[in-house]
Image (tube, rainbow, N blue to C red; front, side, top):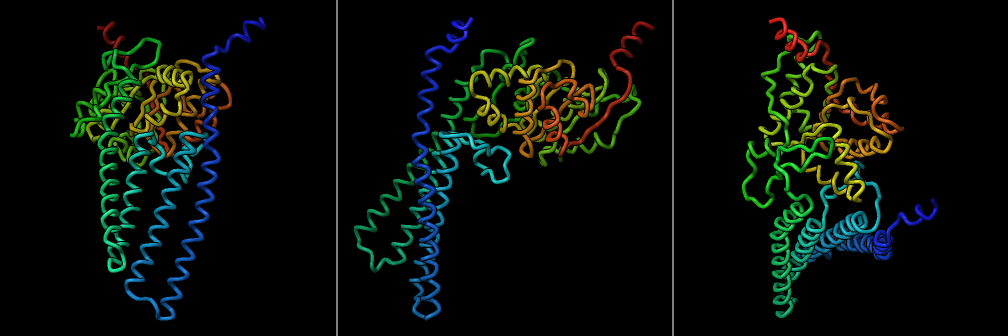
Length: 403
């Protein structure tokens, strides 16, 4: 038994971990950039103090003031560039510092990838080059002609490089998306008992925005339902005002959540689909799957070592719908994956969850200690709509039998 256990780690996996562990060789480089930040802080205040002294003593000319201000701007822009490299590079290549959901997380970090980081760094360098070029032209009388010429050439080269990177980032990202999620299944086909197939990906390379019909097809709805078609006659308790308020989709723009809780057959999925359809028509990207399919999707991503990338990819969707929570129990590991999803979406994107019981009883569904923390984050910014009544399916079946 020990031999079998010891042989469970194939050489390729060990080699992969060893190669990836070399990323820590970059750590000293980032510590050096942190030290460089301190140097630029000193340089900023040194330049600022010199400018104040010259202004107070009346020795500051207009040209000097302009050059001094440009130096201060230059220092700040370089410091911001260092921040981008330190935070983005360390998060992406060296370590996991847990910035997802943190109040200080940079906006661009939620969708960072190699192409995005290249373009942002290139545009930052173009900005710094622009300041340097402006400094030379402000003090043109004391700048050699060859310096002006080469400064302009270098600046134009930076602009051309940034434009090429920006142009290539779209097709490269689309190609990576297609390679990562091959479209070998039809958009509406659902794998029974397995992970939901990738929905029809909205073409990133198109110039025009996707149409409402494209968003509806990409959402993977099992059927299209409208809020206007919802029949509440079989319900004993139904908050029409809450559903009408949700129909305005303010919860999507505010990144809030919705939970529909009630017995089977009370119309929870119909309401979730109705809101999802309306969100697609309003220009939002939506993704639908059952709780079992989401569990398979997250488990597969975790097993492949790409869970973080998968969660970031889901940031492209303003609304995720998790249907049928409560019908299948989940073990502690799967519950932890659901917690990762909810925690990642917290105040970043909206979730609609349909369940056969209120969130206070989700510990009956999700095993392990993750359920309370997940419910806390989900319900903090959530509208909980309770549906109480008999199953409309049973009522229809009874009516047909009586007829």
